[in-house]
Amino acid sequence: MRRELFVLIYTVGCLAVPRNKIGYEWFRLFFMPSTMIHIGQMIEAELHRQERSVIWFAKKLYCDRTNVYSIFKRQNIDTDLLMRICYILNCNFFDYYSTEFKENPLSHSGKKDGIRK
Image (tube, rainbow, N blue to C red):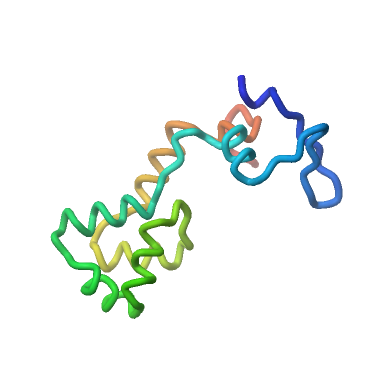
């Protein structure tokens, strides 16, 4: 498995990888689930499904259109912002994360049950 290619050592608050210096993209590629949710694309798809404009959405979020396009490009999003978007679009985007969690419960953590107690 790809995760076995690298051995991570936790030292003084940072990750050290023997003989290899990797950036975030490499870390994401090898240690995070490959089925990560791109929340920005999902928000954009829902907005188009509802036949709403970017200008309408920006007014509801109290921001500029450029910020809305920035949201569409994000793979991750702040939970407070996502909650506001859920209310505006009347769509629970958190369900996508719970479905993802049920299908792949912390598969990259090494825990068998997926939940820390």
